[in-house]
Image (tube, rainbow over all chains, first blue to last red):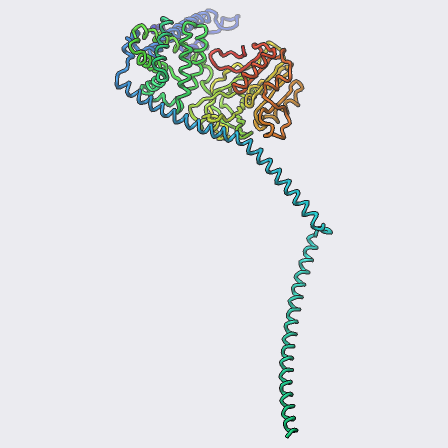
Length: 219
Length: 379
């Protein structure tokens, strides 16, 4: 890099200069033209230096880049790129490994692609089938429903919650009535059985008394 | 540097080494600088194809500087988001030359080595210069998911808030990396014109077997972090032609076109736009409500949507039927329109070919192209 030794202008100096340039002499406006001209000259000089620096750095970058791309020596012999045996073995092994990985990944991808493709192809068929099937079932249900509706006499009117409750209460009352009736029948039957037993017993007593008197009259 | 000698050397190495060349190169790089392994995804298969493609492009254009330099500059800018540093260029150079020397065998002479060294130095220089010229803008944008809507079994719409403002042109894309799948980058289009608050929308469709799209569409939640690369792509609105516009979107190919529609809406004198939105199933027309609202709002916007799958599978669908190229073809004529086509590769090709066969000049058919040419029209 080209060495730049001139005394440099700093931002601080610019600031200082701008505030320190004396005002023009009495009767004239603005800053002292002489001082302004001198300062502009320094600024110009500074800009030229910076341009040179930038160009020189750009050249350095290019040189470094070429060194990175081509290696430090411009005239590398062809043999420099002939890899050694160990290097070839290592690289070949890595290449084989990579080829295996690629094959496995490709297999997996092909398999998933096939499955997805098949699923997509069958999806439309399955949906069409399902749609046809659903239509059949709905038709069948309609037919059954109409048949059932024709067979059953239509209810006079749908039951309201109140009517339902009344009906339920009536059912409970009837059940109780039946239970009571059954109890009565059981009691009545039992009474009749007792009466029958009594009647049988009295009949036997009367028959015995009658026999005794007959035997007495005959002797 | 002898261009022909370089090309011959590359052809010889490619012939002798085949797939092993790039495999060896990365293994050599990771041996020399293990820390660079972290810059790549677990599977290197896609990466190898990419490197081989780039190398082939560079070598075959090594004496065609006019085409090579813009490509390399894009590549250099693009590499900033991976965290590529100046010293990585040196490491890559050594590994590249070691690999070439290994496979070239006896053909590796001082002259050939010098050719490769000079060529690589040039490539690295152009890439590094481009990266440095780009230094004003960040190498990537960190962003946070602030909205996640699962629109169908395999399509989600994400709203992302970049931490710093991301400037882009409607129709452009960014590479996206997610913490859910590190080191895997995939391009997504911003689905909106730039907003005041800087948020962007992505329409993510799960690609069967795709490494990033699945986690992004299924597992993203508000708060998930993403990294976005610099905006790329030239599927943008030419201001010059003034022609009315035909847009053809295949499913999530809608994203960049929706951004363009929002841009047209902001014009003082909007050009007429007819948008065709097609997909295999009605569910894959994931953005219809919003599009219908836009069409109702703007008299210059016409919307036609179509489903290409088996009609038996979508009995209730009321839009048009058939492949989108056929549907577009039934309408028209379109000769006086600028066409913008986006979707799957097959859909774009079929549609662009059909439009050209129906009389639209290829130069008026705009498509996405992120490759070598970076061109944006069909021909």
